[in-house]
Image (cartoon, rainbow, N blue to C red; front, side):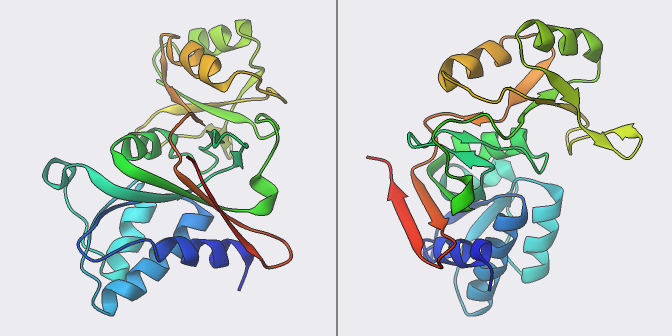
Length: 223
C-alpha cells in the first residue's frame, strides 16, 4: 500500500452515515473514493457530488449515490488532495486540472479534509506551479496580464493542443517559486478579466492528513 492510499483511506473514515460528501479529484482522491465505495457496499448510507467527470464516473462505478447539485444543499465534508500545503493550511491545488470545481465544492462544505504524502507539506507555497483557469476568449490578453503581474505563466498542454478543463477553459501554470502573501495573490489573480479562478485555496482546509515516508500518519487540525 502506498503513502497516498494510506492517508486517503484514513480520511475516508471521517465519512459517517447520513452525510453529504464532496469527492475530490486526482491520484489521492482516487483512493479515498475507492475506500468510500467499499464502505457504501458494506451499507454506508451517504449522498455525494464529484469535482470532475473522472471522479463522478469512478464514484458511480463503486455505487456511491451521486446527487444533482440543486438537490443536495450544503455538504458535511469534502475529501481532496493538494499539490502543496503550508503550515497555515493554505493550499495549491489544480495539478489535475479540476481546480474550479474543487474550489466551488470546497466552499460549500462544512469541512475540507486534505490528503497528501508528506512531501507536499512546505514552508512556503510556490515551488509547484500555480494553476490559473482562463476563459478561451481573448486568452492571450489574459496571459499578458498574468505576465505583467510577474507570474511567469505557461499554457498547460495536452499533446500539441492547449489543455482544456471539464469546463472548456484553459489553464496557465504560473511559475512563482515562492508565494509570500497567498491571500493577496488570490484576490489579485481573480480580479483579472478572463481569469475564472486560481489554484490557491486560502482558509479553506480544516484538516490535513499527511502520510510520511516512514509510514506514519500525521493528522493536523486547524484551530
